[in-house]
Length: 298
Image (cartoon, rainbow, N blue to C red):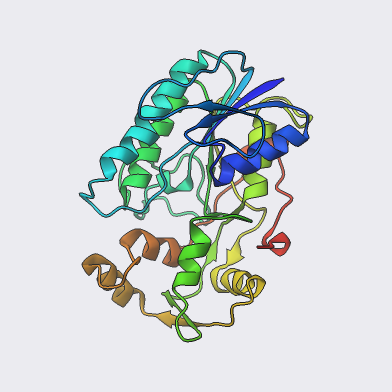
């Protein structure tokens, strides 16, 4: 069985490529850089369609991940990779089973008339995004859903080799303190091993049937308290820091004026709004997340 993985040199794609190879699958890594295993098929998401000749299954992990402020010149590139690049993959896949790795960032963060303790896949995704990443991922997954793909929506993916969340967290530690906006809240997080397992399960490679086309939330089995989760990660990295709470309105004001490097409306929302994903739809397919933050090691 031959599996094509785009973005296999990235965080999620690399974990998926290693796991797929360990299962005995023939792995081809599509991207600008070689993946950790398998063959490398050079591909620039902004320049042309990937060559998926011989592939039986496709997982599209490639994405431009950045929290860009409005009007940033790199937003054009982000759109080219996330939206146009997805269009290219869908065209090249030509009806092959395809899993598109999206993000819970597609969900509209604004309050809705129907309040619920958890967010289901029916939550609005058409507007309200706080950065270009959310907008472009939402546009990309609309294309994938229209093409009959399985779309996975993880939230705040963590694990060994994380190039996004962990560096931002450690960079905020100053003089033994980690300032966090707002009060402690429950949050869904996604171990990279869980999103990897979901990709393989969705393709029917783990003993259960392939998943029907559509969107699926993917996260660890239970949500975490934000502060406890961050303390766990800090301890794993042997970083001694005490969490201090900054009033949310003050943090939002600082984010709007860009007075604090790295603090944006998106990061404030990520840390202050309780987002718990409903996993019922994925569980119904026989998928059950088995990895937790307790397994985390740098």
